Image (spheres, rainbow, N blue to C red):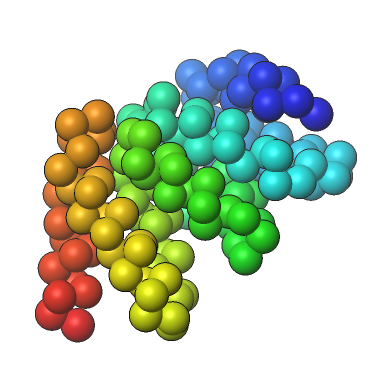
Length: 140
């Protein structure tokens, strides 16, 4: 499955009444088809382009991309947060950060969170969320 196919599928459900249900069906179909890490970037780009959608907590799309944790997902997430942070991707970055013990890697994630806080392309909801997460880190 190509990136543009994944993007087209997501765009078709972007305005769905039941986005959570429709995205769960898509994610299940992707798993059944054996879609790999190549599906992560189009999902992240969709989230960047649609920051106002309620993806769930965390939602099917987040669950799908997080299955590639330790397999390259983290780098793709960092790229997304650098391009256009959204509340969802900043929250996802915080989840990765919380699961990381290596100090050098943590420092990289914290730096990305700090950059998200001041990124002029950020979704307005991303910046205060990044600040909130950074405050928690600072006050441990």
